[in-house]
Image (cartoon, rainbow, N blue to C red; front, side, top):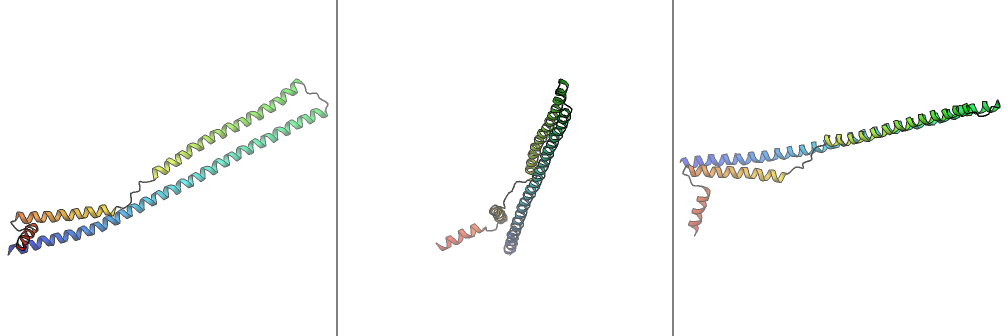
Length: 195
């Protein structure tokens, strides 16, 4: 009498284990899918952030380049006006270009050249910083991105099946330890009776 009750309880335990494994499988599958979707979203956010920063940095360097170009153009116009006025005044007064006059004109050219060189050097510094900023943006995107691991329901299923099998063999071992017939022993007896 003890055997059927103990066996029934063991089978109920096995059935509960199977049901639990099925529920865990579904939960783990949903968790994997949610984690995968979160990884995809994180990478999309990182890419969008990088694109916005790229666009902002490109706009900034274009504005700096335009400002530098405008300053150089204005300096050229101002220098030409001053030299033109000087030449006109000197010519209207009948002054010949003397050594001091030539030195003054050379000073205008030197000042203009120094200013344009300074603008060019500043622009080169800005371009160098722009390149470093672009590299930093790329590094930032890579550091904000995550490894995308797609769901693997097959592995989950195998893991759940292994857990159920472990529980089944534990049940069989418990039966054998209590002196009850295992399913393998019952099948062996049935085969012997059939032959």
